[in-house]
Length: 126
Image (cartoon, rainbow, N blue to C red; front, side):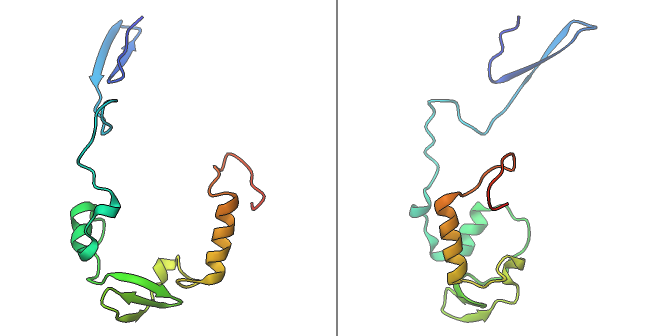
């Protein structure tokens, strides 16, 4: 029997009786290692959201130079207080509008019962 450490993967072929190993790399630190480079969200300087985004988020598409801070119905408000009509509607995820009281109430009630259950099981709402 082979003794396998968590950081090494082994494979073998019975026709040649050859055992090879591959060193695996993980982004998870070894147990007992303390990571000190993480900054909790409450300690981040959010005074310049675009700069914070640029330094911490992988770029998958371009963004407009607007930072929205709130919304109500189909109106969005940016960080300078200027209002905009939300013609994009969250790319179809905000069709019921921002700060919709009925939607907020329904989601809150659902969260008090079940947040998420795997598709491996049934729930009454299905």
